[in-house]
Structures are given as C-alpha cells and as structure tokens.
Length: 300
Image 1: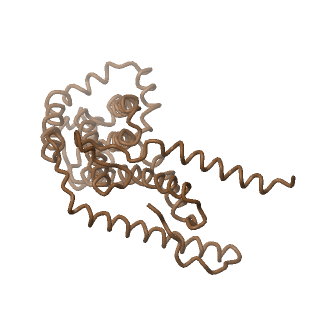
Image 2: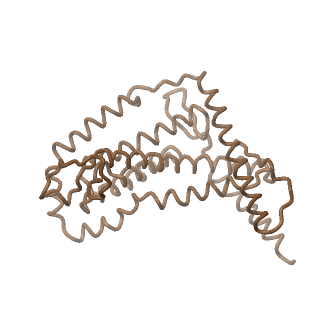
Image 3: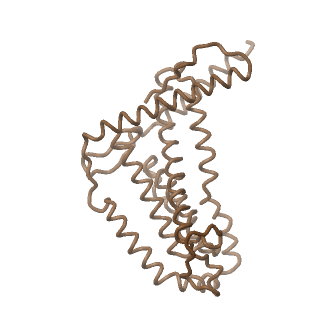
C-alpha cells in the first residue's frame, strides 16, 4: 500500500498556504486509498473463500438467538435481585472500570492518527518508512472502523427496541419496550459499552494474536461492570458482545480477501495478519527519523 501526494508541487508560504497544502495532501491520499480499496475489491471477486462451518452469518445468528434468548429468559428476571445483594465496595470497583467501554477514548485518537498519517507527504519518505506507516494506517483504520460502525448499529437498535433500563425494573419489569424513543432510560438493549470493548479486543485479537486471552478477559469484565452498576441486563451484554465480535470478524475477513493487512490461511481458513512485526519496524523507523531530525537541529 503506497500513498501519493498529487497536487502538492507548488511552494506555499504562511499558515494558510501550509494548511491548503496539507488539505490537498489529505484529499489526494484519501483518494489513493479509496482507489486502492476499490481495485482490491474488484480483484477479490474472482477469489472464492467461502465461510467455514461455525463462521457463517446464519451461525452467528443462531448463537445470538440461543445466547441472548437464554439470558433474557433465565437471567434477566433474577439479575436485578442478585445485583442488590452485592456490597457497595464491589459496585465502586466495577464503576471504576466501566468507562473502558466508552468509544470516545478509542475513536478520537485513532481517527486523529489516521488523519495525521493521511496528511503526510509520502513522496518524501523512504521505502521502509512508507511500508511501515502504510501498514500502521491499515490496522489503526481497521480498529476505528470496527468500533465506529458497530457503534452505529447499536445506536440504531437502541432506538428501534427502546428497552427500559434495570432502574425501572420495580415499576415496569424486565421486558418493557418503547420503540423509536431517544430517552436514555430506554436505551438498554443492546449494550453499547459491551459492543465497543468486544469490537476493540476482537480487532486486537486479529492483530496481536498472542494476547488474545488477556484481551478477552479485559473485555469480559468491562462488559460485566455494566451489569454490576445497574445499567444493563445480561441479555443486553450478550447482544452487544455478539455485535462487536461479529462485525470486527466480518471486517477483518473482507480485508483479508483483499489482502489489506490480513490474509486467509489456506489450511484452516483462519484470518492472520500479513505483517507480524509491523510495530517493531514502524517503531524503529520513527526512532531513526527522530534521531536524524535531532542531529540536524543540534549546533555541533
């Protein structure tokens, strides 16, 4: 993957000129990225990588119906009473980690980082640096898209379902729905925090496969914290978890078919990263550039 910065040959002076130059580079690089994705998409139509058993859409749908249905019938009616038996210390502990499921701390830095990379003048970078940063922007963009797109799906489902939160359990019960409402008190199903954290860790699983157990342990307890503090029912968490996992998996597979950051293993059909040492390579190149710039600034 290589970006270009067309239309940036004119000399610019002053802040306005620099801003216009950055804007042209950002537009040109975004167009190059869109063109590359479209070209890879057309080429992928001739490749056939069918989903294996257990990874098809209907399999995820069946798991959702079983898991969410079981939680709704057997866990939701009793979850509120169970939560009331917990000590205030436990609630405070989980309240301190529940913000891990917020999307802003993920979307803002990854979005700004992608914009920064797309605004660079790639024609001035050497081949190794171009390869390292292009791989970096692919993976960071994958994380951003997974979290953002799955969050949009969850927001739509919240408005469509309008399930009352557990704080209304005593008055309305566990299955009170008010569709097409924007009231935050009727935004229980599904859990946006669970969707965000599981979309993030699933994306991290495909990029950093060795840390998968740690990542999913963090995601599990972050999602459970939403139940402990009384914001969601267990079925809300189950649905959010499935949305986050399934969307990140689907997006990684679409990228693997196009060989953008990932590939499909011919043996078992699993998704694997194309570049296993990309953080080390990118880090070394960034350190090398920083050292060169520092030496250029030193008077002796």
